[in-house]
Length: 238
Ligand SMILES: C[S@@+](CC[C@H](N)C(=O)[O-])C[C@H]1O[C@@H](n2cnc3c(N)ncnc32)[C@H](O)[C@@H]1O
Image (tube, rainbow, N blue to C red; front, side, top):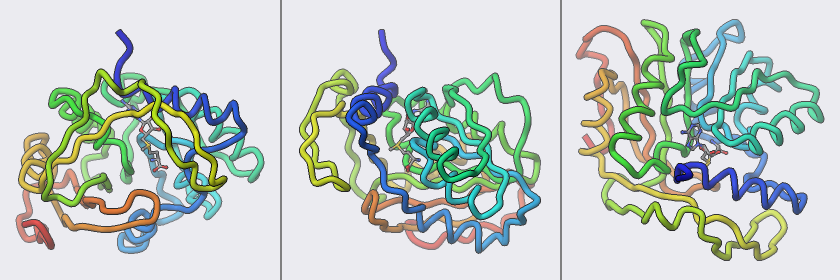
């Protein structure tokens, strides 16, 4: 049986065949804030998991960062390669399933993942995904996690409907398109913090954000460092 989180591959393939991309080329504001707040040096390498068509990775590499970007969708990585070539930037791109990232053996000081965890409906899949992110970090590494949801309302879609076509508005062209539904799981802050702490992450900050691409999001700054409780200052949803 096809894995439900491959439904985005179907969506991308259909749109790319029609000469469209799904996402805008505007980088995530949460990513820009994280890079600035952490004063990330151009010497440090950054790894993105679930890069999609690459709007964030393309932005960072254009700014001079060395970026590795991974997605389970081959079509997404092909599109990102094409856009990188057009922009004249280099990104180390890989097709890989983040639920079992055995092919990536190196570690990073900075890892981020935008709008990917919320696609994972199954508890075990979420656990494996978060474990992969944890294992990708250097001992003092940092992770930015941004996912859809308001941190209050819990909802999950039926994974057996992930590949069903649904009519959606394609925002850049204004066209109606029939694309794979994909999946969604919104969790509340209490659940989210517990699943992160169970893996061993330190939650440095956790707060609600809102952006044009996704609307309401839950944003978390995480680290792998020690057990320094003074670093745990939770803003909203604590
Ligand atoms: C909503 S899109 C977000 C794309 C990109 N981060 C952005 O915001 O433009 C979610 C992405 O997660 C990818 N994804 C889902 N499950 C994954 C997995 N197990 N491993 C790697 N990528 C995955 C999908 O293929 C899709 O590109």
